[in-house]
Image 1 (spheres, chains in turn red, brown):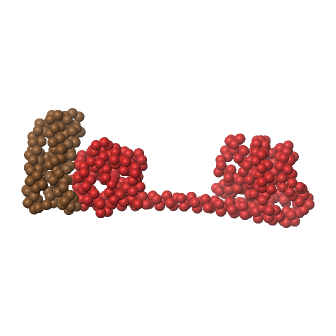
Image 2: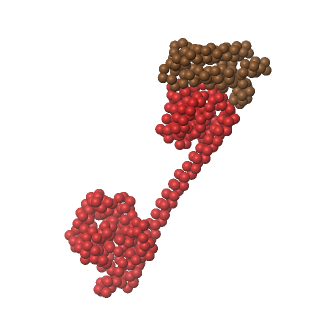
Image 3: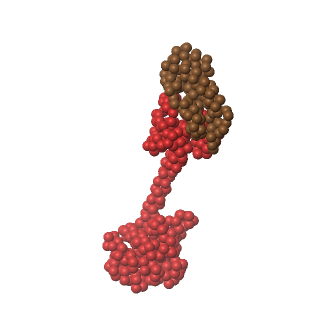
Length: 355
Length: 122
């Protein structure tokens, strides 16, 4: 609670007169010179609502006090009024240039002084409370943005899980792919800074990875759940889950403003592309394939290998590692394979933990 | 404060009414500082500084006396001393102003008269 006036004057009479004027409405703290004033200021800075400051004083003068307040940013919240017996314009101008709110000449009329100081204190209290309000609102807005972000992620997770459940899987696949993706992105960020991956980007891409198979919602049960091998025609339909996926995301958001959507779309469409251009749907070659899609592609293949499927038992993590690095599961970006080797241990730990 | 005291002060040009208002009508505190005034060393310091040609000390002492006198309503004294303050303000060296000595003497005369009244009612 700011309700304290700091009265700074080397003359006892001046301090006492100011105390007589203000002791009804404020708590009064007094200082006899500039050094005492700054000691009081540093101790009571959250309680002082105004400083009434004399100029000519021993030890440190009033300008020294103003200087201290300026350097410590106290002038933003605490108004200062010069109360000076000196009537020269030089002193007044210097005071105003150092940020004082008002200059009152001694001898003064006590009623006028009281009104002027009361007005200044009220103005500053109002200004301070407005600034506090803005701070509080800003914090609230940040929290709400965080909440929206979290809601977005939950929505994405839900969408991904729906697709997976239709596939008669547990919902763990998208979760594991997300974590493998995150690990591989971390290794890329560390070893290939040229890709410009920041922590924030890694987080967004990892969360966007849950959308990689969202297009499967448009593939019929007879194909999606067929226990045996797909015919060529059926496989062609199965392949459309990539383009359907990006269409679904476009239907939700057709601009790239929201990064989740941008990367989600890239991942859904391009996670079956191959580095040598023999993938689908667009036959992109090399780094024309978006980086996040290339990474999710490795994570997706790795998870498929270490998981049990109706048509195969699970491979061990070291078998999966070997099959990916020797090219049995398709062509990948050599830089990313490097990172995959570097992150091998983390992949194996994750595979064991998330079984 | 009894009325005779006030009347004597007012006859010497002291603005008791305005000064009391400055002290928020608190007669006791006004009187306390008024009675203390003759013992204040600052007026003597003006003379000492003039004698030793110390311009800074002269400015500070005169400035202080002016402020105290003005607060107490001792207007004739504060106005006279103010003229001394302005002579010493912001000077690089001690000013060779012929007005200094006579100004001081006039101020001293007023000072003595006021102190005499105060001393008699102490």
